[in-house]
Amino acid sequence: MTKRDAIFPAGRHALYDAHRYSAAIRSGDLLFISGQVGSRADGSPEQVYADQVRLAFANLRAVLAAAGLSFDDVIDVTSFHTDPEKQFETWLAVRAEEIGDPPYPTWTAVGVTWLAGFDFELKAIARIPTATQNAGAQG
Image 1 (cartoon, helix red, strand yellow):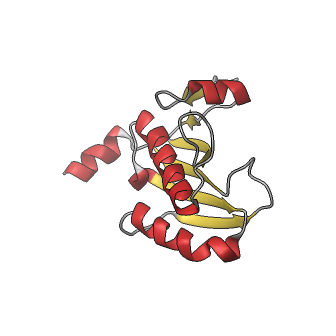
Image 2: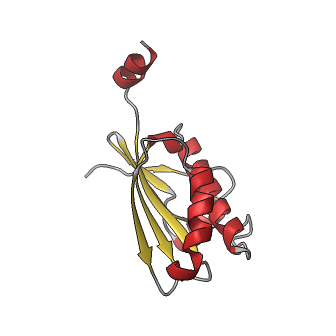
């Protein structure tokens, strides 16, 4: 059995330890990132919806950075929304600020009824560039 290669951003180990999961797992050239919510350092939810979405993206970027990646390496995203109809316009505006230039990753948005006190969550898969890909990108 292959040992899991867990990735953790700085300063959030207590949250992952308390709930018994990894922030991300590297498998081959893929990074599977656990759902990231708009949680403050103490684990509590950001109260303003737009700020909660921004903080979820910031938490996602922190996990990516811990693996030496950025949002440009993300290939697939799933977002979860507690009230998509009311949140959609705000979510689209914040998302546009956060995701960068095309080509965009694939994206699936899902309406849910419960996110443990949060209104938004992001789950992502990123590709880890190989040395060959990095050399090709530079040449």
